[in-house]
Length: 253
Figure 1: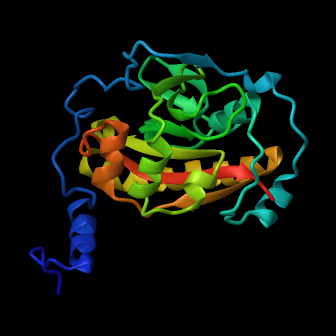
Figure 2: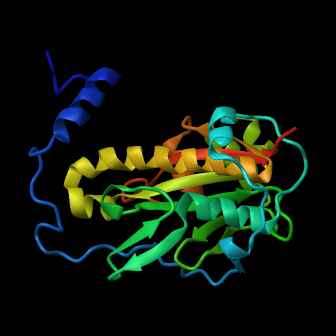
């Protein structure tokens, strides 16, 4: 029998599923006629902005989709070879690239998202990228640029520690860190939108796995992390915005 007061993990999961059933919540902000939240978290820090090469200007080896699907696997060990800026731009575009902004209300991107809400922000832990100093950056998807967040020399160690010291994080060329801005999704769907955030995370990471083959890279998705610690490193509150998924990327051995 379902017990909403149960403290077990199974109880918490069932409580979430019951609480987000259709018809179980009040009207969403969209239903109430409230304006939508911004399409992107504003960038206000007076630090480095790095333009990324346009996807159509990046020449990559042709990759058959069936081959990419057949060869998809998680790879945790990488060479010391750095990624290039065009390769990084390509992977960011494949995972969150904006194809069109519609009425300043929603975006059409290279991945699916419930109601085209696209609630994610992409942070990039850079260890080895040609022309980009190591540090933490955020992808400004609307402009296809990288914005510096931190050049703390210990940032890679901090992120690895927050992800339970998984060794492929400091060993990667880059680590993708996807955060969810909850009200971008709940504006339309209410509490049920939290379900869609987790579905969208799978779409994004699968695109990264498939796209990485074109640039000779391997990927390993990461779902194990100390939520409070990694949110603190990223400078987000853990409620309105929180880490939802991560993945390491590096050149295949």
